[in-house]
Length: 114
Length: 114
Image (tube, each protein chain N blue to C red):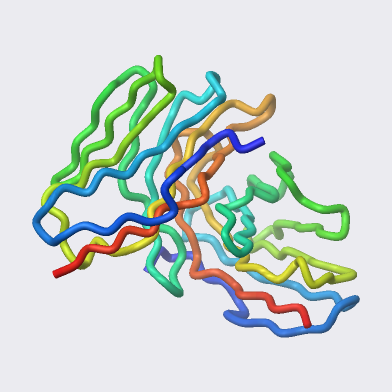
């Protein structure tokens, strides 16, 4: 049972345009959400996060929106740059009885074309 | 550079064998996490250690085990290897163990089982 779903395996956008990456979740106990970016041959790196008490968090060109009623979050990148081309993982955190656990989606490959 | 180191970078072995993957966390981080990323799969959480003690278990097979040593480095042992164990194995570390603690990932160990 996949609790965090990224339904688009890939996304291609033009440089300067907006990139929107989507993520859906099923577990209503998730209370913290994160986006990680991964380049080939490297480990994932933290990008931006949002607490369940907020509906928006912004950091420079990156904005994450959370819609709790729809159990949906999205990452907006404006404007997109070729260096943003990477795999983006959505992750969610919930108390697992003895500890917090991160559950990751399968990732979306973003390609930004010059 | 996340500050998390993993060795070796690549490992090629045969079915039935046993291997050990090593991880050194960032300086000051007490938590170590292990993840598996198979082809077309997201990051699957395997196990977490905090200050030498097991904290949380995910989808870790019985053939796999891990430990965290007094100097906080961790090892993931994979035994009776099968073809399906071929994957990228990531180690991550964080300061604490709460869900709001950002995890820093190492570059991964690519395991190929022939």
